[in-house]
Length: 234
Image (cartoon, rainbow, N blue to C red; front, side, top):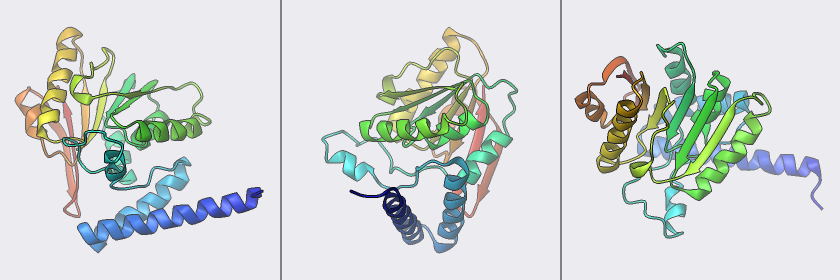
């Protein structure tokens, strides 16, 4: 039987391995400077929030299950520092309902809960990632037991945006085909229930889709060439 100490040691070894793999993936695909920056924030953020969301390119594993990933982009969690900057730059005093479209392992959801959102919803097409998000939420709930978390396994292109959502998070989860439908769904929700919504869009490749629908950008930053954040409002 594995003792508690052995289990902790094993988990630490797995975490270190994940960090090393993450560092080399980013360094080889982007550059080593950004890899060092992101790894530093990974270690700091995972320790701060007590969750396990580090990982990359897990869509390859998901594809083996027969799931259609043709419109999905590579799985990576948003860097903790960019996520925290986004919440700092928020222009809304209300924190009613946070929605992460393409929530992965739930990093943004957990941080949104700590930031004071009353309701936090994440959707993802992968049951594996949804299950991992639920595990991380169970951990963060110990700090914020009154926050209402919901994880939904769903196709973002047909997902109906809840009528009380006031903040939407996107980390370039899809290609332009799906993103166009997502933007249309957001507009439909605003039309049905008029309200102000802010969008936190990291790596905003299709920001133009929001601008065409009368959203305006109120905050923008870009660091180390790849760390790009756009925040928009209607």
